[in-house]
Length: 109
Length: 109
DNA sequence: AACTTATATAAGTATATACTTATATTAAAT
DNA sequence: ATTTAATATAAGTATATACTTATATAAGTT
Image 1 (cartoon, rainbow over the protein chains, first blue to last red):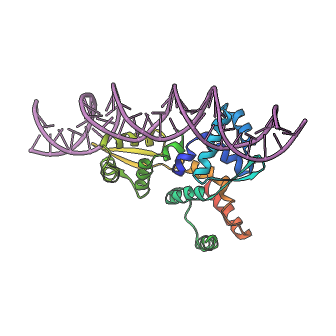
Image 2 (cartoon, rainbow over the protein chains, first blue to last red):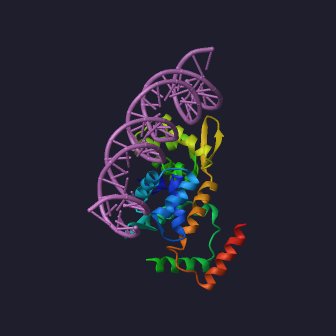
């Protein structure tokens, strides 16, 4: 499933918003999503599977608990796709800013 | 339709990629998409409608032609949603970079 | 005026997917 | 050892949507 399809679902976006604040156990995610969307545990678990399969999250097993964390790679890919449109809304960089951006890109690699 | 649902479709993403390079007539878009995806003119027109309805594009009428342009607002909204994850991959800003970012934000308003 | 070109819409269909209930799996607690 | 808790999976269903063909609309051309 393509990254944008994964993000197309509001429940999955909400789960990622939770994980943006730090790791969460499956049960904690289920509680929040059930409150906000009124769907079953099974449905939430299926969304978690989509997020795992598409690389948006990773899981750590802690006894009977599964602890989910966000993985940045697919999010970065989405961000990179947006690059081609940034010139439409970002003001032109000054020479100094260009230098800094260059340095930032280098550090990233 | 939510911005992420709109971007979930590969044909619509491709159309936006074309428009990122500048405005295109409906017919030009149809030609490219038919080559790459093998779908009918009607199907492309329906995707163009989704892009219009969701605010990703605007149209200018030129006689019998429709000239499409990209509109940035929904793309910016997607970019803004990603903000919450940027800290995961963007190196911490130096004081100087923070100053510049502040200025950039001010200019934007 | 009739024909052609450019584009959009209507109606119908197939498929993907977001749910449901029921059940499996494994760990923890009694 | 049973029972309970935490989570995942299986199977089935309903709905959204991405197509198709056919047709409409409006502008250009002859």
